[in-house]
Image (cartoon, rainbow over all chains, first blue to last red; front, side):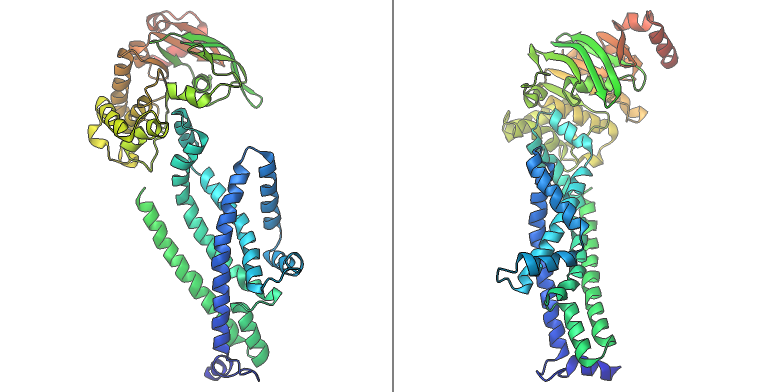
Amino acid sequence: MLDAINSSLFTPIGEDGLIGIYLILNGLKVTLIVTLFAMILGAMLGVATTLMKMSSRWYLRWPANLYVGVIRGTPVVVQLVILYFIVLATWDVDKVSAAIIAFGLNSGAYISEIIRAGIQAVDKGQTEAARSLGLSQAVTMKEVILPQAIKNILPALGNEFIVLLKETAVIGFIGGVDLMRSGEIIRSRTFEDSVPLFTCALIYLALTYSFTFMLSKFEKRLKQSD
Amino acid sequence: MIKISNLHKYFGDNQVLKGIDESIARGEVVSVIGPSGSGKSTFLRCINLLEQPTQGEIVIDGQSITAPDACIDKLRQKVGMVFQNFNLFPHKTVQQNITLAPVKLGLMTQAEADTEAKRLLEQVGLSDKASAYPASLSGGQKQRVAIARALAMKPELMLFDEPTSALDPEMVGDVLDVMKQLAQAGMTMVIVTHEMGFAKDVSDRVIFMDGGYVVESNVPALLFGQPQEPRTQAFLSKVLR
C-alpha cells in the first residue's frame, strides 16, 4: 500500500521526471479555476436568460427558451467537445478557456431555471399587494420580489456550484488536464489503479463536503431573519 | 364614483361573473356577501384590475379603467386594497411596509412618509410596532398594518377582500373597529365579508351575490330583515342563526 502510494504519487512516473502529486495539484488548480470562472459566467448568463424568459416580447423569450432547452437536453460532455473541436476550432482558444466557456454556457441554463424557480416561489399575493399600491412591475420586482427570491436562490446556487465542480471531470475529453485527467495520466503510466483514482475521489469529496458544510451554515443564517 | 356595467369574467371556460351592473357613490360603504364561489372576490378584484374583466366597463371618477389605454398604476394609487392573507412584505419592517409605495412613487419624501406612517400606526393602534417585522405580529396586527399601508397612499376608495377570514376569532374585533372608524370618517369602501353583524352595522348598502350575479341589493335593515329573493332568504337562514 505505502509502496503503491510512494511510486504513483511521490516518485517520477516517466522519463520526463513528472511526479504524480504535482500533476494532481496542477489538475486540482485547473478544476478549481474552470469551476469558479464557469460559475461566474453562468451566473451572468443565468440572470440575462431569466430576464429574457420573463419578457413579454417573444423574440427575447424564444431564444432564451431554445438555449435552456438545448443545454438541458444534451450531455455537458457533448457540449464541451462540440464547442472546442467545432465552434472554437478556428479560433486559437486554449483548453481551459474553452472549458470555462462550455461549462459557463451549461450552468447558465441551469442557473436561469434556479432564478426563475426562486422568483416563482414568492407568494403571488406579494405581487398583488405591491401592484395594488400602484407600484410598477419593475419596482415590484426590485423592492418586493427579488429580496425574497434571493433566499430561495442562494442555496440552490451553492448546489449548482457543487454539481459544476464534479461535472468538470470530463475536461479530459478535449485534452485538458484537470484533477480527474491527472489521475488517469498517473494510472496509465504506473499501471497503478487504486491510488490515483482514490486520491482524485477523496479530493473531490473533500471539496464538495466542505462546500456543503459552509452552505448549510449559510442557509441557517438566511433562515434566522425569517 | 364607481360605475360598473355589464361586467363579465371568465377563467378559461368557467364563467365567474355573468353581467354585473352596480354603482357606488362617494362615501358609500358597501358590503358584498354571498356563498363561496359566488364571484364576490372576483368582482372586488376586477375593480382594481387584479383580474382583467373579460367584458364590460368599469368607470371610476369618470375615467374608464377598462379602456385599453387606461393607466392602471395611476388608478391603483387611488384604490387601496386589503387582502384576506394580509400580504405584508416580510423583508420590510412595519414602517417600511407603509412608506414603500408613497416614497417610491414620489408622492412623499421619506421623512414625510415616516411621519405619516407614525400617524397611521397610531390610528390603527400599533404605534409600538413601527420597527417590528411582520413575522413577529399576530394576524390581527398584520391586518391593521395592511390597512395602514393602503391608507398611506391616501386612496379615495378602499377594497377589502374578506379582511377577517384568516384571523383568530379574538382578533377580528380590532380589525373591524379600525374599519368602522374609516367608514365613519367618510371613506368609500367595498367590503367582501362573512361578518354579517359587521355588514349590518357599518354598511350603507349590502349586496348579495350568488352564481356570478347580484341577486339582491338593499340597505342592511331591509336585506337582512326582509330579503325578497328566495336565494337570499336561503343563504341568510343558513348564516344567521
